[in-house]
Length: 401
Image (cartoon, rainbow, N blue to C red):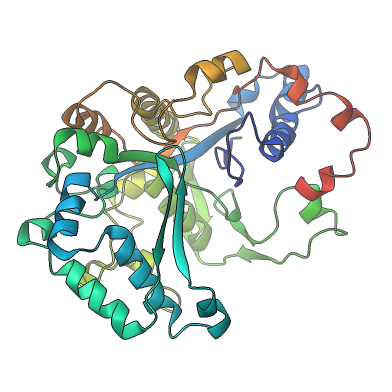
């Protein structure tokens, strides 16, 4: 038996973990379920005489990319056209919004950015008409050169089976600018999905918590898929009949998490690269059950698969930690550790004293997006999972968990 749990690194609320009560409360509720406070899953398995790590494990998803916006290049466009990137954003906002709401325009609509850790608040007036906005965009884009068009807006595809190398990506700024534009962020897992024994799929809106499951909280809808189309497979080294939908769905997810699929790009210029994974029903999926990549993830209980899965998660985790000092992390077990390790740079930016070339060389080792679950994060702070909020009635808890 093996349970693999994929959850977000951090609940979807803005702010530093230490300073945001809601984040701490939700993470504490997760820890009380997973491995702390006396009656968690891990503690109950341990009391029964077993090692919980042999049966249940936790993981997150994380990605990297490069912001295609070197300061020197943008300043050159400003000199050529008289428009900044902010003006172009404001013009695009007018095109997206359309002719506008009279009440909204009456207040002289502006586009604001607030990045106090980087620069003061900045504002740009949104053009009054779509025609004016298009003229601004055309002028701004006229400064583009053939060299600019050779630079990819995203480099994250190199975590998948890309035919090119991250180190070969073009860049129009200097080395320091490229270093400052390399970023990482968590991939927020928001789907509610359970795949059981490659036979059944439960998918819908219900979270695995009291609010969704008790029946007197949130309104939810869930679909249970039980397929009758069986395919030959393996489970724990033995021949096994799996349901086609459940098995191929799990394999597709696992291949993505491990970087065992080609880049899933879709732009007006490469529509021919659209894969069946990117199209909805009733488009038929290509049968990949005999592919080499499928065989790597076919048996989720085999030693070979678990070595690949856990080895990839550890490798990715180590690379992200070395370059970005990503927090949460299992190395951070107390608030003292937290304050020592939280980067002084903007969240998700490079911390390590490395050149852009050295960073790209390390990031080229990232495969897929899986990273280790940070279940030991702040584990030396028992006050997070105890105290009056958990031992006495707290009227706000139902709002979060």
